[in-house]
Length: 297
Image (cartoon, rainbow, N blue to C red; front, side, top):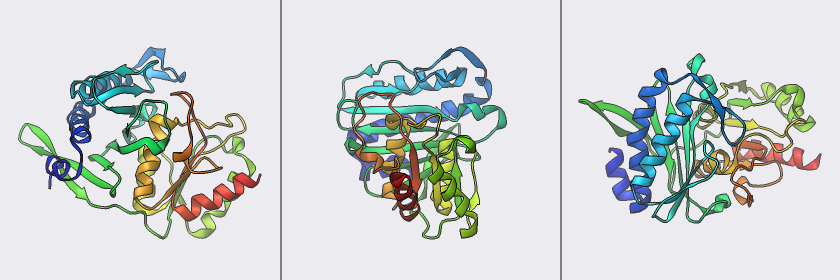
């Protein structure tokens, strides 16, 4: 089954149209990564230095999403203000996750959340989410609230089509991997104690510095990924609208749980588009164990 057939059977028209536009555009982004890796002089609204590929992918995805006529607005971590459209779905995106890793040829990604109301809004307003992985394969992992499914790009003559690669993905019951961002010296005590306990449980450290790449490890092998509360960044680094809520939505459909250390990421009511929080995602039992420890500090 290809992506077009799947969307026709399993997605409302607006989400199908938006997803199709992303599938077409991500092929162009993938092809341009080697040629637009240089730094620009600017910074995005969160203060991160931008690469040419950040701006290129942001502009390409924004134009494609608005052209569908299905987006009420497109908000991006690369733009100070959302772009308005004529549709009913609010789209929040990280157009290129992990661009600082271009030079090391690590996996990169794009993350999209589809909200049924204007932003800012909690993750409970999500009606769908997907992420693209640019690696050895070009894949789209998506959920519209009924399971998690993955499609892989396959060359079909001069173009690519996305074919079903995995249906109804679930986190394995036995966790194998973990990855925690930030400097260990900045981790709060409960995080240090928890991480120190993981090797004795038979778990291995896997961390590449791209959220999408690190989460793919967790989804495939079971475990936990985190950019935790830090002494220097008590509210963490990852952004709710653009990164953590969409990924938490997908992870929940895969049988997992995501927390800010106090409760479900999807329950947070952000007041600003750029709001961040500590983030812990993966197998429910692991995340809830760490959540209890953090909350008790």
